Image (cartoon, rainbow, N blue to C red; front, side, top):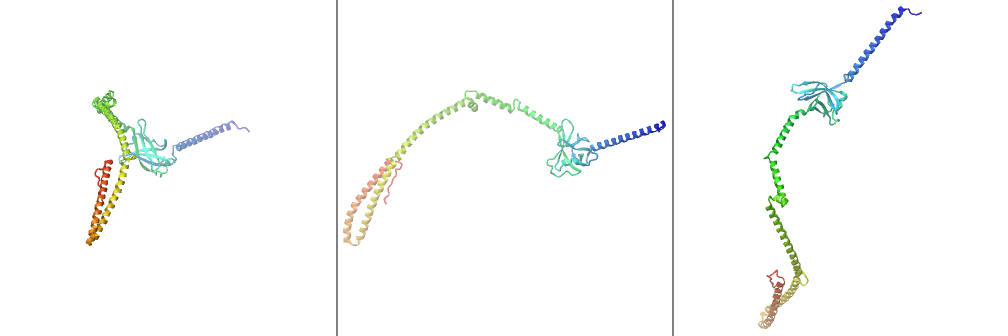
Length: 334
């Protein structure tokens, strides 16, 4: 049986309310999911590690600023405070997933460029060092380019003053330039560089004249050296050549040795005769006879000795004539 109109009108509002309720519930769930996702994306459900950076001045640092490592944000500034020691403190929260980039040897720098805001940066040289503990407190280095401007201006001003002093009319640089011009002007003269070094052309002319005289002297010495070489060659030939002084002297020495041997034999004979004279001294008769004979023998022997000595003397004179380097020659008889 078909429903009556009254029954149809009662079912329509009820189904419409159910649909609206379902739509509102889905919308509410979507809103809650979106809020949860946003909170998750913002890190509301993630655990954090706290880090405090101590600086003398935090000008340019704001809440919400990122702490970067190699250009990537790994933490965020939550608040700023001023300690009892008069130093500012920057409180940063670092997610647990990013704590691995921070070590005990990490260096924190606050870079303040000329244009733009400050930047917080972390530099870790060795990732094998122990990890940075929770609630650690580290000093931060400040690289402020604006603070370097006054020092830079003072340096530039001093450099300009030095340049002005160097380019003044009576400055040492100007005097050096004038002296260089004078020297180059002298170098352009007749004697060139020599005139510039010595100061004027007169001194250069004297030096050149001295050099010419020295060259002439060296040429003369070269001729003398050639003559000396010829003389030395002739002297060597005269002294050590065939039939030279050395050869003749050697022959004369051999003859002198022969004559001295003869003199030595004569003297030995004299010794024998004297021994005989002493032996016959005991007998007067025998002695008289022997002495008479010995006297005759001594006279003849003396003549032979004198003849030998004259030969030796003539030989010595011949040696002195041929070998003029030794004048005082003596022959000692044994």
